[in-house]
Amino acid sequence: MHTSGPMTMWWVPTTATVTTLPRAALANQLRGEDRVTVCVFGDGAMQRSTFPEAINMGAIWNLPVIYVCENNQYQQWIPQSRMTKVTSVRDMAPSYGIPGESVDGQDVVAATKGIAEAFPDRIRETPISEAAIVGVAVGAALAGMRPVAEIMYVDFVTCAMDEVVNQAAKMRYMTGGQASVPMVLRLPCGLSRYTAAQHSYALESWFMHVPGLHVVVPSTPCDAKGLFRTAVREPDPVLFLEYKRLYSMEGAVPEYVEPIPLGVGEVKREGEDVTVVAVGPMVNKALEAGILLEDEGIDIEVVDPRSLSPLDVDILAESARKTGRAVVCAEDALMAGCTAEIACAMMERCFSNLSAPVRRLAALDVPMPFSPPWRTRSSPASISWL
Image (tube, rainbow, N blue to C red; front, side, top):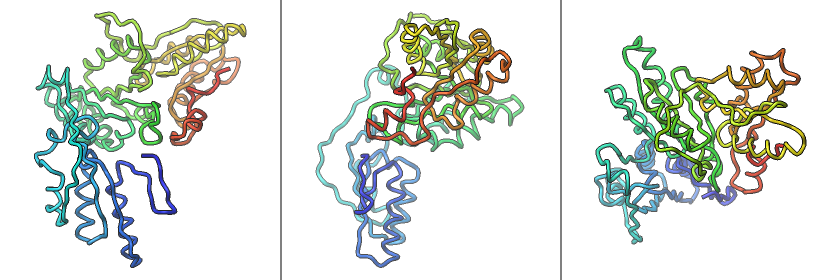
């Protein structure tokens, strides 16, 4: 997926391939070049709302395009038969005025098991249409339900920004408190193996800036359970950011975990020399660094905010006053990231108590590379703390 050769007009595929490549065909047509554009995509991309618009435009302009759908019949997780009443992708072509042909495939079907089968009325599979997913959740919340929606990668919440920012976040304010949106939006985020630029974002700082949204970032399995219990009870929308690298993390999780209030951080390690405020997966890195730094005679205190909006500035300032030094670390970008807001809040509260400026550790200001060596250099999770 992450290969390309612009000199030979081979472009790296993305979820927007269907909308961008026909424009390349337009350029070829206008130049009078004897070229045909081949647009290869999966059946999941067909569920994007922009798909019919792009296909229709290509058809009415008679663009020289061949659309090749690699139909594995399960999008990313969900069987095609549950997402459309059309039995064959080929049958969609005539509605756009273009011919369609089928090439024999392997008929691979993925079945949803477990919780979806146990609660068929409560677990709803969806097309890959982020705006529709969030829009339905907002509507259900306004009607008195408490929906939990998931966008498979936080990168694609950008396709639902109107629903998140202009609808969910503002509804309580726009109705004078008469309506609210008690919705949880699960957003897997951050690095995982070979997910590269379009599946590795950490966007918590975007949503910290939006009044009306709560932003939660757990760092342990137990905290995730406690914070989630709170999130589903909140009267306003909660963005629950789940760092993918923590999915394999193991930890003690009692059957009953008390709900953890939003806006209440926790000291994960007590120390005297420097405060390390760590977000999400950086908490574990900070704890590891604490063990290593003991040999250097440095005693660090690790504080986990757990929620970024609301932010527990009191616990951060109290720790910084005690140690006199502070470092803030997170996996999102350094420029205007969550580390900037946290550092600013701490310095506003306890500037006169600090022996040195607050330092920040975050990702480099570049899209996350696919190349493992470059990914290692770009990620704060891989940068030496020492």
